[in-house]
Each structure stands twice: as C-alpha cells, then as structure tokens.
Image 1 (cartoon, rainbow, N blue to C red):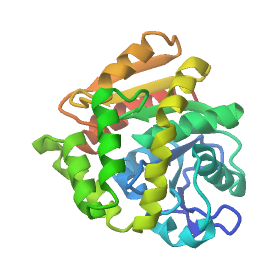
Image 2: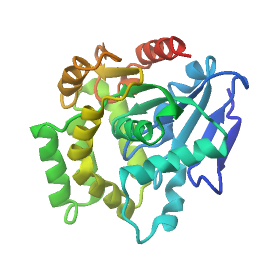
Image 3: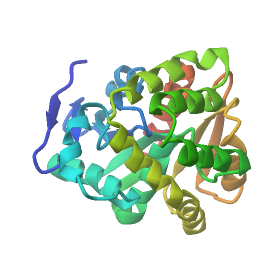
Image 4: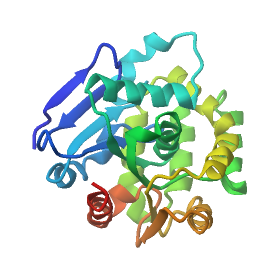
Length: 272
C-alpha cells in the first residue's frame, strides 16, 4: 500500500507517513529507537495497514527529520520534549486516540506519552522494551559516555550494536541500525546520549506508576540485556502480557517479523 501522507507538517515538525485503511479504522502509531528511523518498521507496514490506519514518524534528528536539527540548536533534550513531538504530529492529523507500537528506547517514549496524555493511548505494544538498566547495560552507557569524545561515533555505535545484537541471525537488525545511524549528525546523537543519564530514574518512576493501559511486551528470547527485567515487571502488572519470540534478539520485529506481526495485530484487534 502506498503512503497516504508524506510530509514534515510545519506545526508538528517531525517527518511522518500515514497509511490509511478507512476513516473509521483504529490508528496505530509506530515509534523507533535511538539511531534508527521509521524504516525499521518496513516489515510491519503491509500487514498492519490491512487492519489499521498506520502512522510512522522519524524522531527529531533521525531519518527524514534529520535536517530539522537546526530547530533545536542551543537546547538540550528531555524525554518529554521528544514525546511531545510525537503528540504534535497526532494533533496535526487530528488523531484523538491511537494504539502505539515501539521498539527499544521508543518503548520509553510511549510510556512517557501515556503519562502525558493517557486518554490518547488505547494500548501499547513494547518490543525490545527497556524497563530497567542492569549492571551490563549501565556499563554500556558508561562506556558510551566516556569514549564518545575520543572514539569515532560509528566505531562506538558498531560496538554497541554488536553487544546488543550479537548473534548471526541479528545481522539484519544490526545492519539497519548502523545504516540509519550513519545518517545522524554527531552533535545530534550526542544530545540523545545525554538523555541516557535520566533513564534509570525515569524507568523506576514508570515502573512505580504502573499505567492502567493494556500492554503487550514482545521480547526476543535472545534479548540478553532486557528480557529478564521485563519478566519481573509483567509478573507485577495485571494489565501486561509478555510473549517471548523464539530465535530473536533485541529488535524482534526485524528478526522474526511474521511472529511479531501475528502477536501484535492480534493483541491490538482484541482492544479496538
């Protein structure tokens, strides 16, 4: 299906695409992670657009929102700022309610959106969800912080991608993230890295809030950094469900798209 919309709205700023099924169909909004872009959802668009109206966005500084960098010169980012960017796109399109699908750090942004405007969020599908930074993931954040001033950004990014997605069957996921990260300005990615200092307090707050929104966690069984914390979280949240996808790593929507689409579409259809 060809996109029905394809523009950086002047009041929303972010680049977006819409795929319209019908005026009465539910909306699904996709949020990518740091270093990626809306391209990461290319294996989802066709299946989802047969059931829903679909919106994909490129977050500030990423993908085709890259050249909007000048709009944020001289300002540091917060998770709320980036989440409000997404809500501005929904306002521009007059989307009053949407289901949200996110991957990696995009799952944190969806939780922030749910805090800012809970009536906007019908359900959440969180893939490769980051719910807590354990010792290994905190060490990776420390390595990135210490070495990013002296090591070429792409060397560091390739290393982090290899650690996060180490297996042979994660090759396509690694390739996509590295390819998209190469398009990002170094100063821009530095702003996103600075956000990481706020991750653990924010994640702890989100866990304590426990939003009353139906949530599906889709995690790869080989997501060695983030799967265990999600299991602990789901055990304490009656509105949350965990499905573990076999032979898949952190970016399970790319590693196993058929399984991902089947579970995510079934979950959203059950709540539309």
